[in-house]
Amino acid sequence: MATAPAPIRIAVVGLGIGRLHVISCAELKDRYRVVAVCDVDEARAREVAGWLRDVRACTDLEEVLAADDVDVVDLCTPPAQHREQVERCLRAGKDVICEKPLVGSLREVDELAALAEETGRSVMPIHQYRFGRGVQRLRALVDAGLTGRPYVANVDVAWRRGADYYAAPWRGRWETELGGTLVSHAVHALDMALFILGPPVGVWARVATLVNDVEVEDCAAVTLRFGDGSLATLSATVGSAVEISRHRFTFEHLTAESGTEPYANGKEPWEITVPDDDHRAVVDAHVATLPAQHEDYVGQLDRYAEAHATGGPLPVTLDDARTALEVVTAMYVSAREDREVLLPLAPDDPALGGWRP
Ligand SMILES: NC(=O)c1ccc[n+]([C@@H]2O[C@H](COP(=O)([O-])OP(=O)(O)OC[C@H]3O[C@@H](n4cnc5c(N)ncnc54)[C@H](O)[C@@H]3O)[C@@H](O)[C@H]2O)c1
Image 1 (cartoon, rainbow, N blue to C red):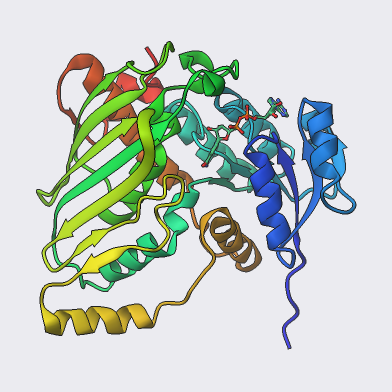
Image 2: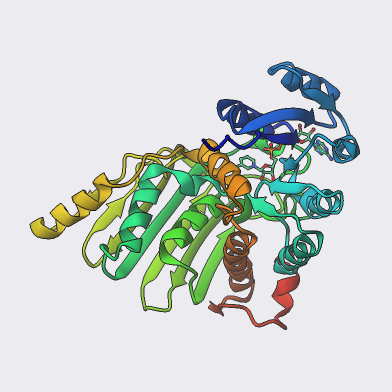
């Protein structure tokens, strides 16, 4: 009988949302052993280390990188630190998981891809929303050729963020947050849309700062155009009284609409309406064959552990993050220059160097 692979020895760095990474690893206890947690705030590091047995509390990434018992470093630090920290981890011989937004430019994504190749290590960006069972169900229907052609998709990200949220010194500023609601909030919904539809060929966006007294945008309205002629809209705000996220995909043979749970609308319930009775029976039969896998962070981390053990493809790749960040880049350029931006960007496009003003 084959023996189960040893659990991945992981260190989680940055213990805001990183707390949820620790909890998710603990849920997957056959897959992961959290050996260290790290935060520049020592009290935080000690508190979280105390949640599990035999976890070291560190206050400096260097301590984590020097440790022989760390296989994977999971970076959950503020965005502007990611580029340099991912590089340090790779050079120290560690595999890396990194929260969104991975980095602040496509060139930096490409540099990290080259470095991963050179060091023989891997980088998995976090895009956990796409592991909801609802959006996975739709993806399986697309893969099986059961949706027909896409016509229009509508994506709404209506969240609420105020002064408390922007009190964190890194938020609300181009230099440290790397962008506003497009990069920080809508990127999840964008990733889900691209997971279903693939990359667009044209982007036209408008952005505005209307809700908070911050440097970056906190509202956006975007149209996307795809190579097959289909269209999508995306709207984002942090000023909504009621928080929702919603995706609605209109295909030739069916319409799929997500639930509205703001931070997990990839999960069920999704309403899939198939007008034709015979086709509905085929769709239902296919759906009945789909395995029920973990969702959310646990879903991404579970699949990551599987890939780690088997050498299979990572559940989210640098290419996936690049695709979403290329669309984000196009959105900012479009809003600034009031024009449609065509994708993919040319290799000599100055926007490859970043979207910040
Ligand atoms: N995928 C998601 O749904 C999701 C949700 C929230 C945040 N995020 C992303 O996660 C990252 C962190 O966001 P957050 O909301 O947790 O921020 P936060 O400010 O709440 O927490 C960041 C933590 O990192 C610590 N830290 C800062 N610099 C550090 C360093 N050099 N070494 C070790 N620790 C350090 C801080 O002390 C703090 O405890 C951001 O990139 C954010 O966009 C992703």
